[in-house]
Image (tube, rainbow, N blue to C red; front, top):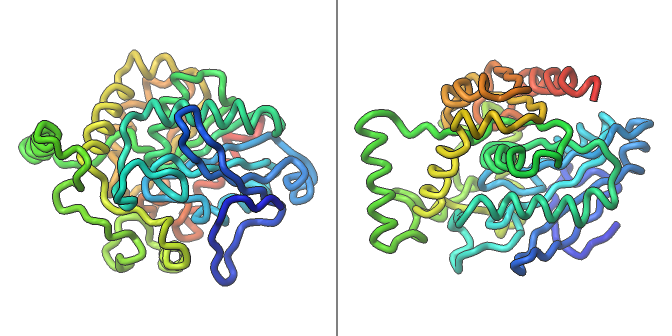
Length: 323
């Protein structure tokens, strides 16, 4: 076990056995934390190895939150490689206030994935290669599917950030106008209106918009209390602006038509954060896209109650059956 990067555990919840954890330094001198489970671990767990799955997370998320999911992937015979996106988890943060959720260009995420694949995954892990991503990671991975068309043999998306619920009509226009005004006023790195450094560890379960499962919600908060540096607060105006423009580009029919990789897209029927309607409108433009709705699920499908998670895993197993 290689331990040259820190990681968090809580009572009864830690990384599956056989992991390696370390740092990758990117082309622009950014440190990204990664964790991996190799072919030997998958074979020990499942008796065989079906290839390698690269797992990436949503905004505010981090490797530790996905220990349970990684365990389920290993039990299915997949080697696993995962990393914290730049700007969150224990990877490099771009601003002095580390709790500001900030992204300067989603191209950086595409290039970070390219480096992780070229440096760590393809030289050391067996193919075929798959990706699974959640929320903001799902937007980055849509761009990866377009810009790196041969990177993955198939891709799975959980509640991808292909659109955001911001209201319609006047409300949407005002929201966009406020963001643009703050950008023009030089406040790109300020928290969005009403935002602060408060992280999920301070939020009550009641009324949350991510999961119906109190135990998994509490588990995430416990991890953040165990290692507060994992936390992330509200996004900045630049994050909002960059995300909105990037989503607008990626939902164009011509852009989507260029994506040929088989995609499985799972959406929660009780979603309150990303825009399921926008996702549904995009699906017909994807040559090999499959959409599944998960009943009784909010945004974090993989952190939901067992019945909702079972719907996701059944869809996953069916999609991956012959791959």
